[in-house]
Length: 254
Image (tube, rainbow, N blue to C red; front, side, top):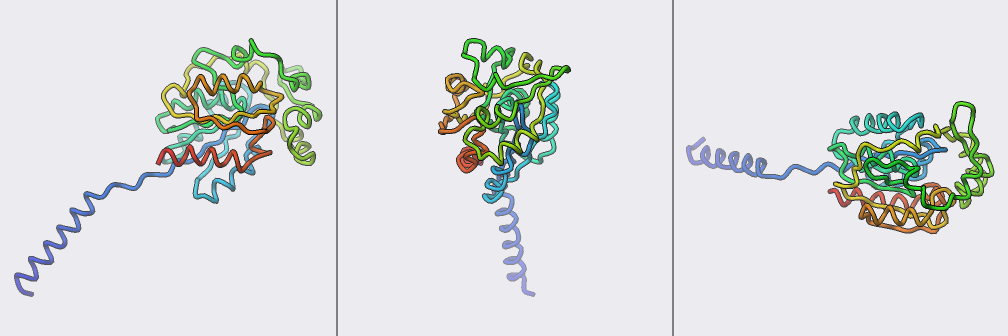
């Protein structure tokens, strides 16, 4: 091999190294971590999950114990820490309070609230609702002797998910997670929405979380806001619309 050929090959090799070294690393697509609310479990997201996965988004659904704010936050943090890369954190209803505290993790790049509570630091869900009329669904909550709450069948069918087919509301009633009533009085230690972009889905026909309160919270946190003509569980009645908002939050982080 001539010296000229050797020099050309060496130059080509060095050029390849330079190009490789100068190439920007591919950005990781965020994983979506879904956090359910009270009177529910992780299956509340079963229609949203395949829609996101079909668009190439990895999804994890948390199973909240609903035994205390700190317990739900801990379960959510474990899910966040299990992800290798950035996270978009999504919460429904009570799950909004959970993601507000758990979302301070450095891995969390954005928050999505689905008809959800967004308290401030030092504020509880009970504090948020104090100056608003009691939603009609609350009259269908029953408590056991341990202070855990569940919704009656009527409460689920006519107030939690009045825009969902009856066969689904029966399943929702049977699988609902009882929530400790004291959870709603616990004050948050942090508010992740203060330093991270947020999206908020407002349910306009909500009988469990006042629409006017949802609007006020969305404004307070400076969220990108979408309003749906839906009851309190739009992830079940309008999964395509909910998945689209979550996908927009994911896309904004890439």
